Image (cartoon, rainbow, N blue to C red; front, side):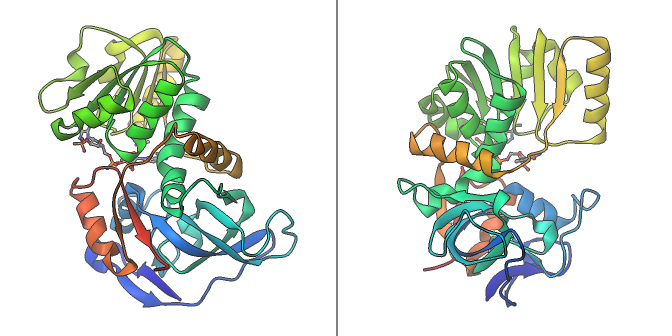
Length: 316
Ligand SMILES: NC(=O)c1ccc[n+]([C@@H]2O[C@H](COP(=O)([O-])OP(=O)(O)OC[C@H]3O[C@@H](n4cnc5c(N)ncnc54)[C@H](OP(=O)(O)O)[C@@H]3O)[C@@H](O)[C@H]2O)c1
């Protein structure tokens, strides 16, 4: 099969379109023909090597995590799926799997059926980005009606899903993004939007119940004065210093600092599918490219030139 692979850490030029063996489903796994994949920043962070302490994908590594497609084969003991069924999900790249490929084989815990109302493009955009927003706001922050939340990166794939979910939960949303995307974030339902080049949200004269630093542009120490007494700060870039802050916050206050690490399972995917079907989450898809264009698209993402998501159409 064709797949976008790399053998060494490096910039986007290490990516190549290769011919590799089709993965076969093991016990409890399904094989899926990928129709559409979507790109996330974690893909280029893995490829560049900056996450090498967290883990190294098996070589040749295959690009991408999120996909939507059709079940083509069942491993032993799989009873909940049938061949021909539409599914979407997210692979674990450490296992030598990747979504920018014609086929993936993965545990049924990492997929869920695609509702007929959703296109493969929309389904493929959901797992990592919207999953991060949903797990952060609903499961960790337990965001409630009337609470206040500040969301950085509010125009990005994670942040825009977070704005949409926060509005659904009845929170008062302040977004932070670039000037070009202010109207987009207001249109998602934010009450107030700050252009990060013109205003510094850390200097605001108010406090929030939740600060969701989706863009990972602050430290807990910087954000803490902007948090209420019982406030919670969530940052999407877990670093050693952040774990230290989390411990300190627990020991010294009623505030919480959470280094976020996404955990995808089929229940999370089902919740995301429901939110997309009722149009609570509507991903912004900037562009759909082919497998041969993935390296170029990823370079654009790394340079901050992408608004929302890039999809990769694997089956023309
Ligand atoms: N830990 C985890 O499990 C996990 C899971 C998912 C994602 N993440 C991380 O979450 C981050 C966001 O992912 P994404 O897919 O949403 O990326 P993205 O689509 O590229 O969005 C980046 C966002 O950051 C904004 N931004 C840039 N500089 C900023 C600043 N100084 N202040 C405030 N906002 C700023 C951009 O605004 P403009 O475009 O409007 O300028 C854009 O909205 C990435 O670092 C990703 O790796 C972590």
